[in-house]
Image (cartoon, rainbow over all chains, first blue to last red; front, side):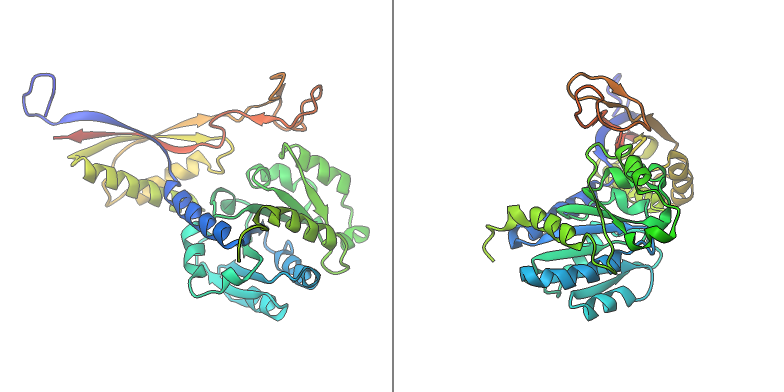
Length: 234
Length: 114
């Protein structure tokens, strides 16, 4: 009722909310994060362009992780096909495909649903391979402990400057396919410089899944991220 | 095109709030979108204009406040230009981002209540 005169007419009120539009996703992400932390599982959100080498990185990780006795798991998202999940299974990573249809990114709810009936608790490192895309996945928290962007040397040195939101959110950038550098005009110093212009604390590893260069450094970085979880009873 | 899923979340939040307050009509929405939110305000607006039809937001105008992304040194407060290396040249500390630069929020809904 109108409070000015009590006339019974409807009243126009401003409802102040100041809440995130993605509050629902953030709630689901918190829920996922609680699950991962209490189970002592390191969850890593792996993002990057289509063809940047995300699946190749995980295959190389499987070869290197054996020495650390890590069990690896992954969910792998694409608009269509379960090809990546099958590649990962062949590499020894327990995997499941998430087919997103038209959706260009994963959200926390999709990840949550994919964890049901999947033995993710029996892993030390669990990868969430996002849809190949440098835009949309950046703003959806999935409940991961760390975000990694895979950027291949064929993509151009200024890629970070073109997609600053994605790179700013990354804890690590894996510069992939560095075995191709001798065949390209790419200048890695320029690439590192571009990263320093979008990431206040840039961290990058140059890696080749084919030759194995950088893989040990990458696995050591994962071990560093796992450190806070080491005391969790399994 | 994540703008559609954002608009979907936005409209269902408005519907929920309107129901809760038994609103007769929603009059306007105010959003805040930071320069580094990952969202293009114009794409968001056109997604909203398509999506709002047949919902409580049909015909409801959207006002968007843009928030600039400003970098500075956390210690000496020296401004660091966008596009420069994000490290203070004198303190060597990583630059800090201004508040709201990554905001993507529903600030207020104006509605008619009984």
